[in-house]
Image 1 (cartoon, rainbow, N blue to C red):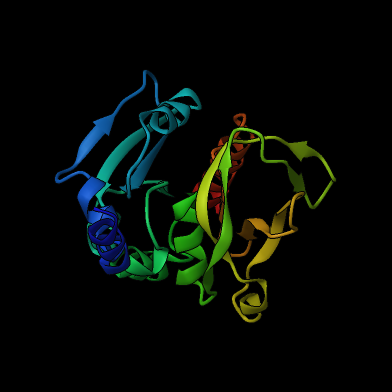
Image 2: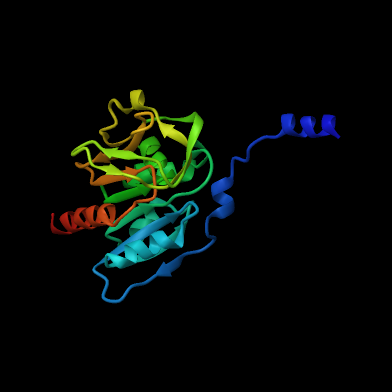
Length: 218
């Protein structure tokens, strides 16, 4: 009945444990022949295609649950840390935020989608829910450095609040052509960067490789 349907809608509360529901329960591996680097991936709902993208640029990947501690990640002796995509409000995943904050400057980091938002929160920035999110495969993004356009797919409801970046050490690297919101961040001093969308090519992965190589040779 209409009245019952409306009452159910009014009483609905969005889940706050979405990442816990989709994250793996134990460590797993995505191997590649003749690996050059080892990466730990925090699973917030990771897509297998992103593991394969890391494999394709010469990385062995160790996938760990979202609540894996910074100490456990360091014990893996990895060259870099990848923070995956996933569902829900990034503020609902304090475990990952704390881990990123603890590892800042200790490992090169690359965050995608939800991982981008979590990295921003770990650095002291804030995220806000958009009235209209970004969904679909035709969301234009501009690279701030050179003006190059990318047309990635996106599936997000949250965005990093630009006013909150002051004092975080993060620099805006990508912007939405649609509404000028932040689509990418970086802190080169700490060798960390992120994008709000699934990469359209291997350039971000190559950038991640370069950071790991610089850290190894430092």
